[in-house]
Image 1: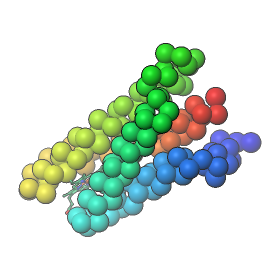
Image 2 (image 1 turned 135 degrees about the horizontal axis):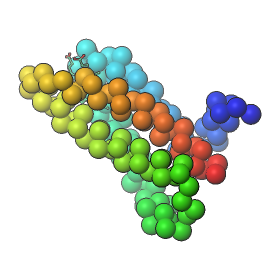
Image 3 (image 1 turned 90 degrees about the vertical axis):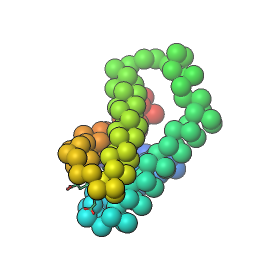
Image 4 (image 1 turned 60 degrees about the horizontal axis):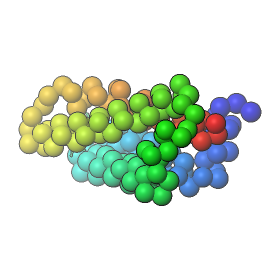
Length: 134
Ligand code: HEM
């Protein structure tokens, strides 16, 4: 089965994967509505909050951080952890620059960072499935 086929099969059976896929759709929806401030800000803050919720859930219920020393450290796992951390940092910077935009500051980074954040968030989704399927 190809990557798209196995990803769809995985998503159907794993609630966390469904939520993660929903966050990706929400981010795309938010970017498409980037000129409608209320919709944009609500979508982005919701996506950020859900993702933070996923991190808290994975840590509290599965102890993912503590489990790292006991796992087989593959390049894929390292890549997945790295992009997950970068995504969380970029969420933070987008929220900061977004709040500054509301106050009238039109810097360049809020427009450019999504070109990195969105592909990385999609990659996070795909690699999360690959890591779980191991
Ligand atoms: C993942 C998070 C986010 C992404 C990927 C994102 C992406 C974008 C993009 C691409 C634009 C259009 C920029 C332009 O063409 O000049 C934009 C505009 C904007 N964003 Fe965000 N954003 C995010 C989060 C936020 C947050 C959390 C806030 C506020 C708390 C925010 C507030 C704004 C505002 C005020 C604008 C200008 C909208 C307008 O033209 O009225 N963004 N955002």
